[in-house]
Image (tube, rainbow, N blue to C red; front, side):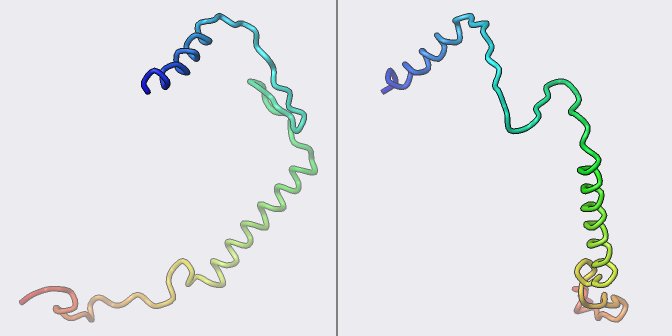
Length: 93
């Protein structure tokens, strides 16, 4: 069993030993791909759309924090700890 598992590993090592200097370039026709250079700037339309979506998202978050603070702060008032008894606080006399 060890031999059957080791043969593929030996074949892979043999392929690595061969000094193959040929490099193939992957052609990607679906989008712009840049390697070690700055990507091309986005168009004005994309920038405007991004700003609108970002503005809407911030409006949504801030509006809901203003009108429904219970989602973050909780639905009930925080209890006054000075009114608690020693038993409720776990203090033994």
